Image 1 (cartoon, rainbow, N blue to C red):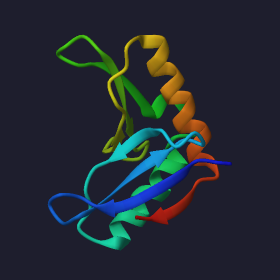
Image 2 (spheres, rainbow, N blue to C red):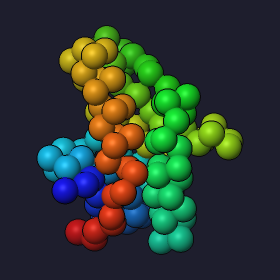
Image 3 (cartoon, one colour):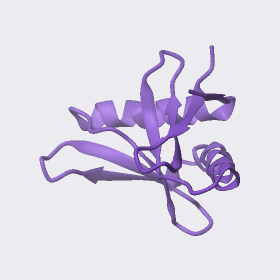
Image 4 (cartoon, helix red, strand yellow):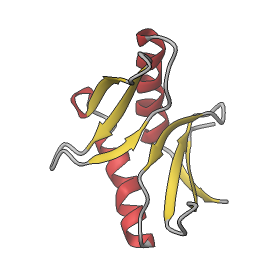
Length: 110
């Protein structure tokens, strides 16, 4: 089973999505969107930009844990963010999971 985008309302009432891998684990969380059209543009941007490793920026949180963000190759805007990982190698597996899951991901509403 491929990955999927799980769309839901955020606490502030706006829309957001989680990209989930085939094992149902969240591998990327979006920013919030004020409209359905903007959310759908964000999903398409993940599908497009996750295909290129140069669009992933590896970072380290203040607690020393690695994570990554996915940026648009067009304008550098942040599309989504990962969870915090226990190691750099685990974060790299997360990048690979986003790349794999986004390719053929369907969208579901919760």
